[in-house]
Length: 435
Image (cartoon, rainbow, N blue to C red):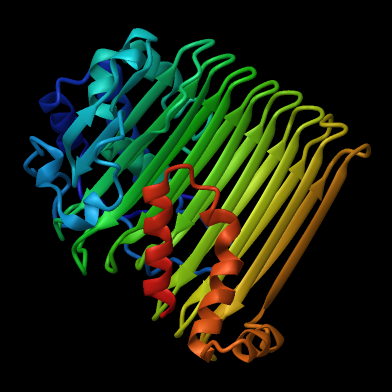
């Protein structure tokens, strides 16, 4: 079915943007073809969330120009808190749509690691980007928002780790939003070649209270045979964005991906976190924490799909809802025919802090193979009064006791983040949201 939608940019404008960035012909053509597809493809249909009246396509400006940072001393205190200024050797900061700061150690350069903004990578590492950009994990024509994203990419990161290279220290990225008219069409592409290992941690931070823009974010992780990727993200985008996030893993034989995601946006959000375990012996751990407040509407679909034999997938999602926030948690474990001896496990739990808040946890197991293991657990409820009573009997106030219970509830994900400053930031954000 053809669905007509008003789009912010035409095919001509998209080509002009590509030419102004000196992009290779293949990327300009991809953009132009994608914007044509976006006019016709249907919107995604997240389960139990009606998004027909959400604005995903119109915004004030496609690209805003922002000043780069000549040194980290120019960062605001809020951003400095996220970064180990002295110790972080590999760091990229994007300010709205501008590559604002980058440093990469000589050691990683000598090992052949590529760590740069996505549009520079398109120009300077064209063949490598073309091989993986929306070809295996996310496809351009999945629906209107994936096509729109492909057409309008205006930021993001490319990380490539060569075969047999083990990156010992985490690479950090900060996406800073300090312009209320900025829209973020960021694309993150992480490729870990065979027998490599890397830890990548990013933070989205808005220093404006209200945004007029769109956030359409796609992140692809390609882990080739026996590669290991640890991927952490803390998302704190302002109210006013309409946010679509698509995180996708494509994991080959004996490879592993660990996702640790703190989803703290103040915007209405549709989020997909899907991992395809393509190879035998592949493994995925997905840990997610969410806090919803005020009148937020959010939908989080987390799926691990098993294609390879002896593959293992684990999903852990904990959410806290307050005020009149509404959130849907869909957890899906899918074992395809032929993925024998695989194991799919998931747990979704939602804690309600207010009478008007609502959270739905929907665990789904889809099994097309006999010789497998699978299990799920789900719960939606309020803070356990017995836990509160016990803590209050030890001298804590009710507010202090509730705070401790919430922190314990969310701790499995918070403690999984591999950079201490980012872990501290997530803890601080959680405290501010549930106060």
